[in-house]
Image: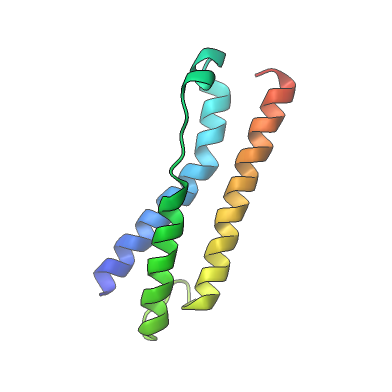
Length: 100
């Protein structure tokens, strides 16, 4: 079970980091034509991974992530997801206004 927990933590962290990285990459390295033709949305993945992590840590009290488990992990993890999507919105709006 611990290996599954570590795999899910790695996947979740990677997806949240992806959310922080991708708008910057799009803003600086994609042309306007590329921006119109492409779409990147893997939103359900992080919610699914977080739900599984919450379930695992809720039912097995010996497992935790940064000393968080169960619902507290869900709240912190959900907050990270919201923060990452807010970051995407801010970066893309700022680049839209600056003409990048």
